[in-house]
Amino acid sequence: MSSGRGLSRRQFLAAGLGAAGAVATGAGLGGYVWPLLAREDLIPGQAPDVTLEPQAWINRTDRLTFAALGDNGSGGRQAMAVAESMAHTYRNAPFGHVFLLGDISYYGNFADRYDDVFVRPMEPLIDAGVTFDLAIGNHDEALRHSDEGYDEIEAEIRLLDTPGRYYTRTYGPADVFFLDSSVPGLFGAESPEQLEWLDDTLASATSQWRIVTMHHPPYSSGRHGSTPGAVEKLVPILERHHVDLVLAGHDHDYERTVPLDGVTYVVSGGGCKTTKVGHSDFTAVAKRILQFLHVDIADDRLIATCIQPRGQVADRFELRAREGR
Amino acid sequence: MTPARARSRGSLAEAAGVVVYALVDWLVIMAPALAIQLAADRGGIGGTEGIDLLIASVLIATVHAAMAARRLRFEERTAERRADIWIASLDSLVILALATTLLVVVVFVSFPDEHAALANRGFPVVLLWAGLQIVAVVLAEITGRMVFRWLEPRAPHQPTVVEDVTVAIERAHREPDRAGSGTRQEPPTG
Image (cartoon, rainbow over all chains, first blue to last red; front, side, top):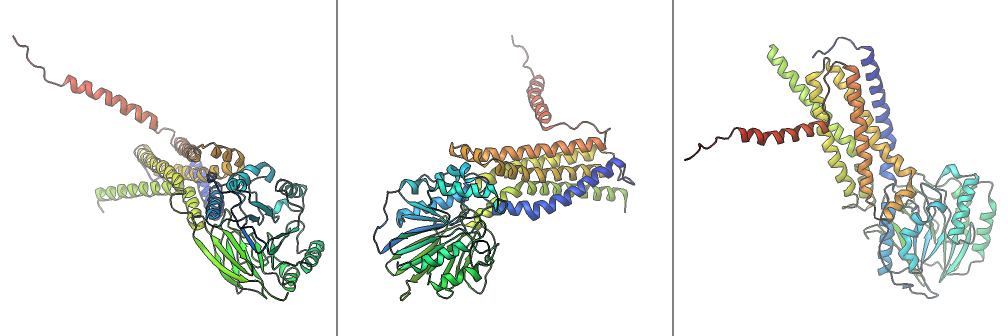
């Protein structure tokens, strides 16, 4: 066997293709596809096989227990692990409502994937009579400002029996506001109506607690970060009306801010995927984990627990209802 | 340096090259399963949640790393030019890296409804995973062998794994006959 003196035409072609392919493959896989595999939830998961006692939560005017779950729309193994954790949590600390914080269907339309991303993972809770309220998300930027985007939102509203794109509910001692931060943007110049509605509705709210849920977080140290325009347009309204807690998703992590002018902001977006999260001046806790938030309000006391798939507690905090609003 | 010592160093380098190539081959096949396991661990699932995919990938990667090492050793014995071996191997590795990862991503992203329905019926997702990785391995092997034959048209035909197994079975069948014919016969009595 010889080492050869120069490359033949065939060798040159095969080596050139191999080298170019190696560079392109190395860059593409190492820089994009492998990290994508490590942050997505592509492998189909087995639905939780749990039977729960129906309507086991305490139903009183001074009591509200709910779970907040964001960005859970994969139907994959990680989504199923979080859903199973929710079912097990219900056994020990039953909750009557789940607030979905947007992005409830990845890898396809919600209408097509309704069973896989909603019914299968949530079946034990659905059977137990738990209700679901949705704050609309925008899981796909390409869908924005398009007929397809509107169709998707219409399907979510129809299938989850949601009263509208933005609405309010009164549960026990709390008024809960569900905002649509998707098309054409809650914080853009085009959409002042929703902010006016929120301002008016918060002004007339009479419950002891005020909770706002939405998809895009006003404050975040995650991959997407704080939502542009939110601090200027939305936060003054929340502060003016003494909102206690703001729940959001969008970034695939768990974050809690220190109280900012009395308002605590939580990102609970670890419903099926995780992405990097950093720390900012406003950060109290930030973790790259799969999770959901369990919230228990009893009269003037709110206890929130961030729970991971194996039941580990990642964070726990307590709020007191503000007096003299 | 004496010619004998130079030959010895050369064969040592070739052996090291084969080992390194087999190791890279193994890691490339393992990468998707490791990425998914990393995501599960980081998310707090951990434990045995994604272990089925890891085990499947370990088996396929180990078998294919051994096959790749065997192919390289064969090519070293038969190639006229050493460069042809490594050019063909590089092409094979590129196809392997692309196929092991992209097949998984494309199949699982493009047809989520079908896969979830399969999972619903208890279809072992691990079989789908293993099937995709085996397809990737076959594509890589075909690429490596075809490029090598294109570069070395006069090289002898390399037996496939199936042919190797067939030969081994035939040899095993022949062995007892040979053993039987070699046994000492007892002298007739009476």
